[in-house]
Image 1 (cartoon, rainbow, N blue to C red):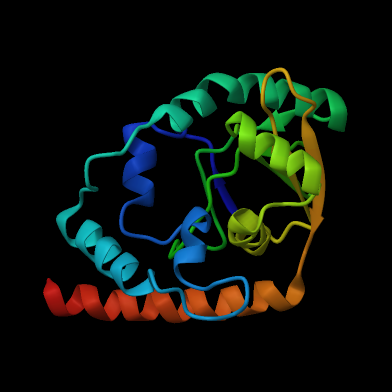
Image 2 (cartoon, rainbow, N blue to C red):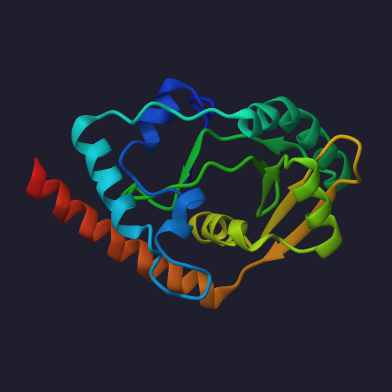
Length: 201
């Protein structure tokens, strides 16, 4: 694992580091949690090839949910530090190895532990739904298991934090079968991506 702390998430350097490579937050666009190819896979392949060749990303989309997340995340991280009893480090990006073919951008890595943290700041309806079900929403499973795959860590914490509601903090262990499927799918995707970049360059 290679964790980079030279820049913060959302900096220009962070955007450049992620440009043209698949990231854990988008692994669901490559493979579904049921092991099937995602319908978004081809378009995601084209998008990343375009980024890699042009050295730029499309204009970023910034909505109210993202704005709320950026405002609430420091509060959520402080809550997690208190509950988990560990300093939470915030790398700009994490690669699995020196090839740097794919990456994740964790909301936190627990200092001195092989554990990471994913923070979500959902709107009220979704936050109540998460609390009621008490499990990691399916839509975030690829991101969490992908982060475990990339870091090699044993545990990832999922935190749903919405002001006025009880926070939901869930420990997530490694799903080795799903991690194996994602590793194979992402490696195959990266090979196809390299070939496509070569064709259009």
